[in-house]
Image (cartoon, rainbow, N blue to C red; front, top):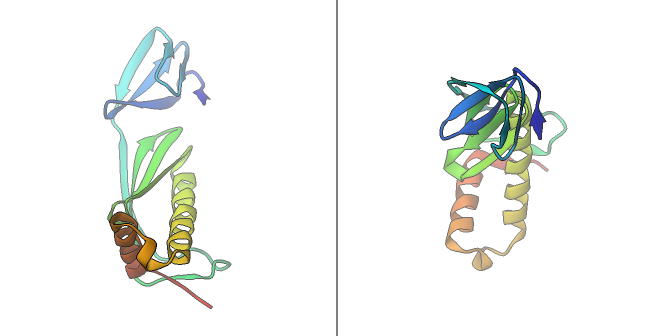
Length: 134
């Protein structure tokens, strides 16, 4: 991914760098001459629904932490150790919702005795928050 000139586009050591007069690649390799460090945006909120078409119910709100700026956002649900990214806050959150449900379904599909300690713990946490509606 490459971001255009004057867009905030890369996280480097806990800060976002805005490059003017050039581009930056996703690997932090710059083709720019001027850089300005900007603080990361931090947003916390709760997911209380997955949407009307999803066969899932939120048993208790899932607290989501979103970090990023402009074109690079990470959404995390710390309790279940689930994280994903997006080019906007809403895309990162939508991706996280989808990932949470995919992980939930894949862990439920496995026999409990075959799950290792970490996947079993992740499933137990997700079951506190999510249930499948028939």
